Amino acid sequence: MDFTPTDEQQSLAEAVRGTLRRHGSPAAERGDSAAPSAHDERLWKSLVETGVPGLAWSEEDGGIGAGITDLAAAATEIGRARTQVPLAETVVAGALVQALGSTELRQQILGGLTEGGILPIPALAEPLRAWSPTPTDVTATGSDGAWTLTGTKAPVRYAPDATHLIVSAATDSGTGIFLLDSPDATSEQVVLDATPATLLANGEQAEQALREALALGGVVLCAEAVGAMEEALDLTTEYLKTRTQFGRPLAAFQSLSHRAADMYAQLELARSAALYAAMVADEHPLDLDAILRARVVVDSAARLVGHEAIQMHGGIGVTAEHPVGHLTARLTTITHTWGDRRSHLSELATRLTDHGDVTILG
Image (cartoon, rainbow, N blue to C red; front, side, top):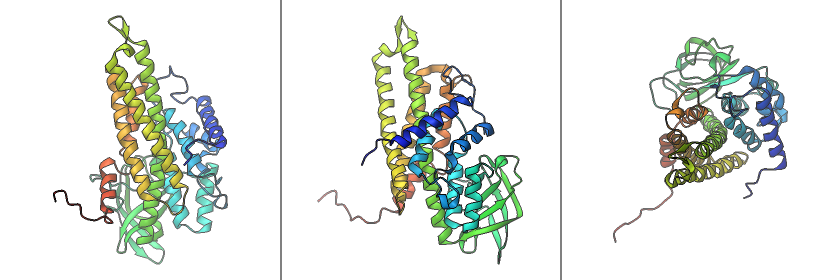
C-alpha cells in the first residue's frame, strides 16, 4: 500500500496552508500565540472558497467529488495551524444526509455546504452520560411525516452557527435520525421541547448510517490530530534547542532527547494509522473496525505527544499565552469527540466473536 501523497494532495495541502496564512490563523506566524476562536467564520468562508468542505461529496450531490483521503490532507493542515473550524462536524452531518436523504435534500444540504450557504452540524451527544451513539434523553414522537423532538443535546459544538442540525433521537423502532431546520441555539446545549423535525430514517438503517458517518468523522479527526501533533513536536524541539539550563541547551540532556524521540515515533505511528484510515474510508464497503483501530492508535499518540510537549516546556506550556497549551487542549478535545480510547476498544471487543478458545496450560 502506497502512503505517499499524490501531487494533487500536496497541492491541496499547500493551498489550504496558504489560505490559513493569509487569513491570520493563530499558527500562521510562529510568534503569534493568540488562542484560537471557537469558530472563525471568516476563515471558514475562505476554506469554502478553497473547496475544502465539498471534497468528500460527489458532484451529483453538489460537492467536488475528491474523496476522504484528499479531505484528510486538508484536515492535517487545519490541525497544524491551530484553528477551530467545523470540518469533522460537517463530514458527519453530510454523511448522514448523503446516506439517508432524498436526491433533492442531498443537493440542497451538501450543495449548500460546498458553496458556504449552509452549515449542517450533528447533535448526537447527551449531557451527564458517557458517549454512546444510541440516544436516550432525546425522544421522538409522531408519524406520517409529523415528528417532534423532546430532550437535550449537549455538547453540540458550533450549534449557534448551524443552519441545520442532524439529531439522533429514540423512537419506538430504535434510533431515528432527524433534520432540524433553523435551530434556535445560543450555546452548545440544544434544548428541544416538542420541536418539529423531519425524519430521515429510523431503526437499523439509521443506526448503520450513524456508525458509518461517525467513522468518517473519526478519520477527519485523526488527520487533524496528526497536524496538531506535528506542530506540537516542532515547537518542543525548537524550545529544547534554544532554552538553556546550566549553560547548555536542553537538547543536550540525553533524557529529554529520548523523550522527544518517543514523541516523534508516536507521531509517525499515528500518521501511518491516520493515512490508512483515510484510504479505508474511500473504499466500499466501509471497514468500520479498521477506522476504530486507527482512532485508538491516534488517541494514544495524541495523549503522549500533548503531555510530553507540556512537560518539556515546563510551566510556560500551560499558560494561555503559549501555543503548545492550545495544541494540547485541541488534542484532548479530539480524543474525547464521539467516544474516547476506552469506548473505541470496547466497541471493537464486542465484535471479537470469530476466534476459538485458547488453552494456556495444557
